[in-house]
View 1: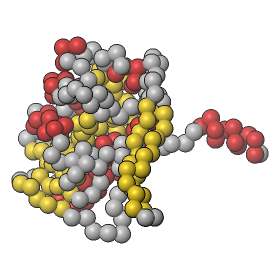
View 2: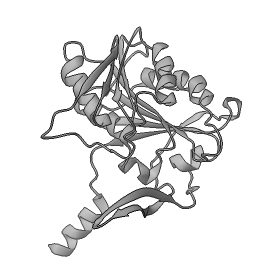
View 3: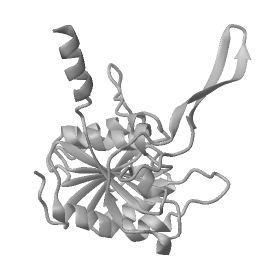
View 4: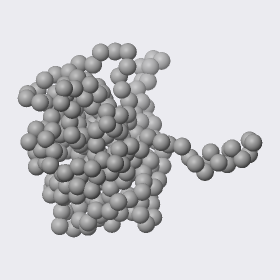
Length: 260
């Protein structure tokens, strides 16, 4: 069980929207309220959908942007691996914060999330990790970045004070609404969310070569009580513990019985 005072000495932050993203700048302000030393190691451009992918069998470029700030030509998981395996190997971070993602990471979406993937990678190094997202979908309006900026410090302090099992990371989603409308946070289960599939479009063709764009397709979000989507859709903050074990116990028991 991870048990810790919420005052940290050293925090690593990363994301999947890229090192110049607004959400990372907001997260840096939040981290500075929790620790005197904040490291930024993030992708040099957007890597949404990278999940927990790492760059094997090739080199990864790293660019020092300033004191304790690095842009990496790789995935969010690469960033955590480089930070913990090289840059901070002599004094590992006490906490990893990934985000703040521009868009929700709810239900089945988390399978593809680079934000969540970075947090899970942190757990492989034995470091407590939290993924944070703002559930913004409407591209016609600006995200309410002030909502996580106001509420995340208190949420993180409460979670760090309580502690959580060593084998999990936490996935936190903030509703995209004004800060004063936000309800207290709740510990939730993942649920299925609103992801319904993919849409693929061909944007250019030249001879036998085509350029395709892949986007996630969403339906109506579930409203089941206790799920993260149900909480966020009603202006609450969801906190979901995630772990690596994806075994379906029901299916394991079923197959064992049928095949015995």
